[in-house]
Length: 383
Image 1 (cartoon, rainbow, N blue to C red):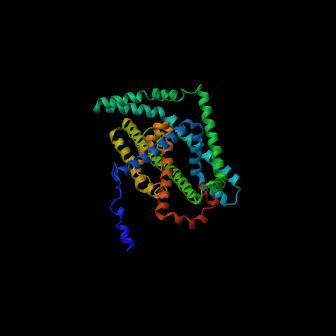
Image 2 (cartoon, rainbow, N blue to C red):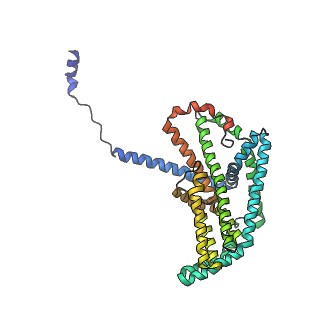
Image 3 (cartoon, helix red, strand yellow):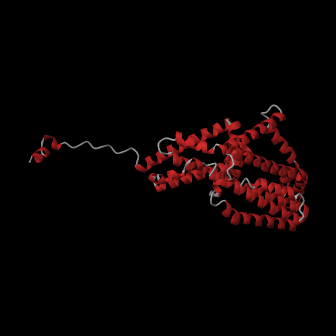
């Protein structure tokens, strides 16, 4: 009865004030929230890119050291498994890295220098042949080939315009190379210390998950470097043998160009293959050019359907559109060096995002049982 009287009291007739309807529907507010998140992420990415450009003298050796560590990381782990001291194992690995990179660089540069004039003259002849059939397009290609040395000289002058002399450019390159080699040594030797530091400074219980993310990102870089180097070597050998059988001039230099171009996915293979076909067209005729095209296409089919699925599918999973966008962004930021570094960095970011997705799909509590398996010995650079 008391409840009835209270409900029928003087204040019962008063209605509660109704809340005013929102200005925007729920869908519009959600879209605005996502746009704000996208703008914040874009601002952070732009800030990171700007800092990397401003600090390129320090950032570039770090990135090169990561690539070197990924390339010969398995060798370091094997030496450590053979009970060698970590410092000695890292030193031997850096020595092997210096021999491999220096030797490969010497072979590639010497091959390109020895056959560069022959390749350029063949391209000029191919341009003249094409100009008879395609008019202005062939004339433009002839002009580009005839001025290739001038363009290379101008590009080198533009790249070194900010330096006082050419000697300083060489000195800067050597300093960056030495710094990258030293950083590779420290990355290999002190990876376990880095993991312990991560566990010490990570907030809350996020250390195991952060370690898994770092390991996944480094495994992506490692898989890209080892897989790309192996694929580049096979492509270069196959195309060189094919061009030698066809008696195409400058076959060794063209194979070296294929090896270097393989580190720029899709774009590098297209350019190096087109150069090989044009050289064959100029010096050996239309029929041999078709055979050279068949060799290049056969190698590309072997790479796309056999080598990449077998070698890189387990560590690097990126859509071709993502790769092309990464190459374009890297070229706009840092030129040729950006094109070389953009794909492994994108692979690392992709690996980290895959790890995050798996973590949130499994639930935050799923990382608990695995936390005992992520000790310092399982560091990104040593796992």
